[in-house]
Length: 331
Image 1 (tube, rainbow, N blue to C red):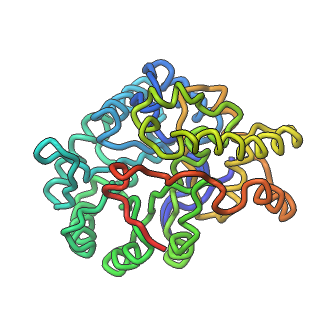
Image 2 (spheres, rainbow, N blue to C red):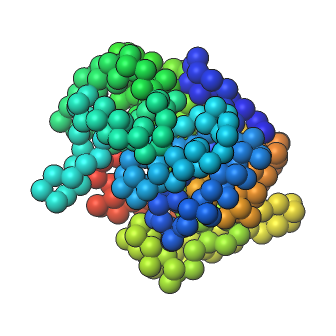
């Protein structure tokens, strides 16, 4: 398993991680047994990084991981665990709170669900627009001193925001959607992470199924919480995206590789600081994702991939108007 450094001076971690949002049923029901089977497969493959959040299933994802730690002797010591906080509710609507008091209180609850005394990485999940990021960074620095986390990060932020926060304290990781279907991070975030020694933790690295051999059928996508409102899964965008990614699936098939593996290999080829965290509840699909870490792409390979899926190929915005509340746009 390829490894990389988490942040400028952090521990060595597998370059592939496990995104545990899938454990909370966001993309369909997932049992604890299925989730534990994926975590067992990850452990067997040398995947040492697990990413979750307090809001994934309102703590359900963390509880599943905590139960796995409790049942597997030595698993916690072999694992880098990351969680997040900062998303809340106000007057029945989604809101954000980056105060130290809120973040630390939520972290305490996460530690209890996970059954651990600290996490290795704690993110601000979404920025509170009214609070200067410098103030948020100072709060994270104070939490870091408590020993409840070993490092801190930010999620869905602009490159300029990362640089402002890093001027206050080291930011070990930034989490952002990044894949062949979402290449906005190349407009400054990839470069800022490289300059600062910050890991770029890439979620949805296989394009929410579009970059796999089994993309969600349209009827299934319309029954899932996230995709039923997402522009890329609405017609006519959905059909256009399937047609575009059919070319990618054909390329992968010609090379004797799963499409998901080729998508992961392309992402890892973007730099050692890039750490994909795909989510799945299937051991078979997880094996395809792990295969991506074993493929060393040449310049010619990358050119062939980007010929069938050039920058900007995807039809539809990556988020709906409601889904864009919280993430920072940048160009």
